[in-house]
Length: 356
Ligand SMILES: NC(=O)c1ccc[n+]([C@@H]2O[C@H](COP(=O)([O-])OP(=O)(O)OC[C@H]3O[C@@H](n4cnc5c(N)ncnc54)[C@H](O)[C@@H]3O)[C@@H](O)[C@H]2O)c1
Image (cartoon, rainbow, N blue to C red; front, side, top):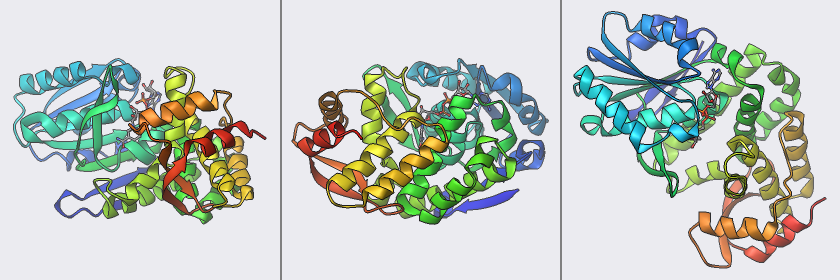
């Protein structure tokens, strides 16, 4: 088992990564300071992984709340359900909320933990690859409104993250591969040698080799932790994590959140960002090809036939600007992402039209 520490002073916390983390009861039990714990999970994850979690909490006053699996559950109404469950439990300031599931459960649970009595302890037990490498670390929590995703939220760091890679065995193939896109992102934005490692170990990762997954999760969490340590509130470097995301959000919106999984849209978006970087003379086109080849190995989509003009309109909306200039995360080549101000909309459209 690997331990990694996120150094954020009195808000710092350990991340435990490995096979069988959930079976080691003390890892969870020692994170609970008070006598009450509420476990939030979803209808797919709960039946599979609640038993070891509840066993670890034996002797405490524990309640469980299960939401329907899927993005549609990340609502204020479900946050209210969590508050009601906390009230019924008699949860005090030292109570602990435990989120067992993917990013939906983690974002909703963190949001509720941030607000209950102005903030209680929160433990993340991520069970999707995306949640292990991204959403469970860094303290961004939110729920959606009909007007848009993640509009209501708070920064609230967990007290501990327990990433048991054994739980990934039951994850649907498409969800697993979408999570790999976020792993690739760390190599793309800041770690060329990790990108090389991913290429060399692509077959092992596709076969879900526990050793390969454990290393990929560890390395990804190291990157996420470093970025969050440098820029917890996203005033600078943390924005680099959005590489490919502005393009990706436009694709997700155009596909009504049904056509593409988030990681798939990010995979296409990263390729678009890399090609735009080449189009603007910032980076060699061969680096865009390297990234594309790697994503293809993971059987992720790398192109989309959505209209470039419509995409750029949506990207403007995403950035809340009517200007012809957009601020995007582009790169100077593999491992060297940067924020670029004033990218001309017409350059983006021209680049998207120039499909190879
Ligand atoms: N807070 C952040 O920093 C951050 C970062 C990235 C994404 N997010 C958020 O994360 C959410 C997406 O997360 P996600 O991709 O984990 O989605 P998710 O939580 O909806 O999980 C995807 C699906 O997999 C199922 N599942 C989860 N674990 C499983 C397992 N071990 N075995 C079988 N099925 C399992 C779920 O029930 C669900 O159907 C989005 O809401 C996004 O906004 C947050």
